[in-house]
Length: 230
Image (cartoon, rainbow, N blue to C red; front, side):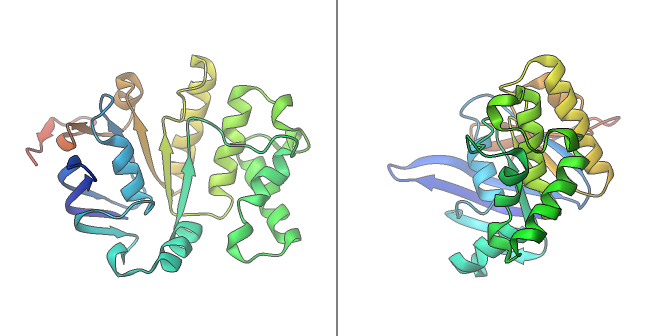
C-alpha cells in the first residue's frame, strides 16, 4: 500500500524534515508512526498523504508513483484512495453530522442523494446512526471525532491516515476511537496512526519510531525492534 524509498524533504532555509526515509507498509496493516515533536511525523503525514512532494526519493501509494502524477492526478488519488483524520475535527459549524460527512464526498463526482446515502452508511458504521441530524455543538468530543472518521471512510479509501486522532479527547473517548480504528483495519483498511503517545503506539501491531527526520526503529508485536539506521 505504501512504499517510500530514500525519501528526503528539505524546506526553504535548508531545514531537513526527512532525511532519507525508507518504509514499506502492506495493505491491511495497522501501524503507529511515533516520535517526539520535531521528529518528522507531520512531514511524513504530508508526504504519505500526497499533500507535499518530497525533495528526493520515491513515493508510491497503492501502486501509484506520486512523482508521475499531476496536481489534478494527486487530487484524484487523495479523493479515491486516502482518508484523513486529524486531531482537530474540522467539522462545519451549523451543519449536521450527515451533511458534514456527505460534503467530504463532493469531489468524488457523486450526486447529492448518493453522497448522503454513503454518509448515512458511514455514520452507522461508526455507531452514530442515531446522531445524524445533530450539529457539532450538540456532539461530544468523541462523537465529533467519530463523525470525522466517518467522513474519512465514506468513500471507502483503502488507506486511512490518522494524525493524533485522540489528542483532543479524554482517555475514555480516545479508547473508543482506537477501537474504531482497529475495527476498520480488521475490515481491510490500511491504517497509519501518527502519534507522540507511546502508550497508544505500544498497543498497535507495528511501531515505526522516528527521530530527527529518520526512522530509527521498526517494531512488530511479538518481535524485537529492527534498528533502521536510515
